[in-house]
Image: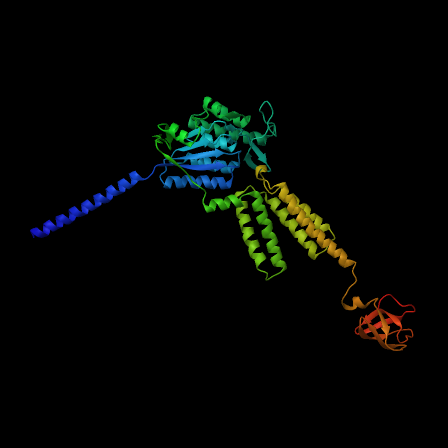
Length: 458
């Protein structure tokens, strides 16, 4: 009995030692895990692809226990909807978000300014700029102005007298002022950036309390962040960036695909290939390949259109234009359908995107319109040639043809036309070897008349 008690106690101690060992191993592994800052590169126009990259990137950084996220910004602006989605993600993030305008020569214009104001810490590299955050109305879609030349007084006057524009500007000004107040930054200048499209350099932004740090590079930024206190989700945190490594988080295949197809020019091409592929498949059933390629391209285009500011009136005009041009081949109108189709096609292409910064390029529109116009002009040319060409088959081929009599006859006899012997009838006497011309054809009998002179040819 005593031996059993001793054995049981030994087993319990061994189990306890084993659990302690596992705990120590886990603690040592956690301690040995490298601490890092996740870097997300916000470059180019801000749109659906950028939104997807940043939102998913922050989630990935949280799941990997990153110390903080650094948004490396260089953007001329972008879509209001995508910008607000990014800002909502920043405000709800459970870890510090640092906005860093870099490298030198970069800018955080328009939408980039709002994102910088939303971040827990705002930083810029020397020789960078931010500002010009005025919203604009383009074809019914709200976007944010991209930096362009402005009057010397800094005021934008495009449609500023309209109630709709004032409403948009006031809403944007209140939005960025709220961000500035929540982060303790210069709210007055933020509102001027919206109403007057003013801009600042890095040193000016630091002096005006728009940003907290001017850093030459990433190591310098991490050094200046160390020990800084920030409020994350209502909790005061002290940043510990000493010996912190930075890791650039590249977009995954899904985001890269979205980046490609969300390009308005690519989406436009996919739509055209899809429509033409389905048209060719319907015109030649059983070809399969045009239908498969067309269906895939059209689905990709529709997916892109879901995340782009598309004017569906433009889509309808493009489809209508293609239908008209294809109809020209089956119901010849000698140009009416073709010219109408090209006009609808070009008009729809121009108004396809509601945002001028995401408009389809004129070169692409011109090229596709030229190809379409060439196609229906070729059809018209073929139709005109066909109209002026004598029939080469059937009864129409025989009318007006010349032949030679094979015997003398007054009523019925045999003639040779187009190297074939035919039964013929006539109302005049025909001599053997005399040239004749076909006047009519009834079944397999030709009505002919004799010719006094030899006609050209046989």
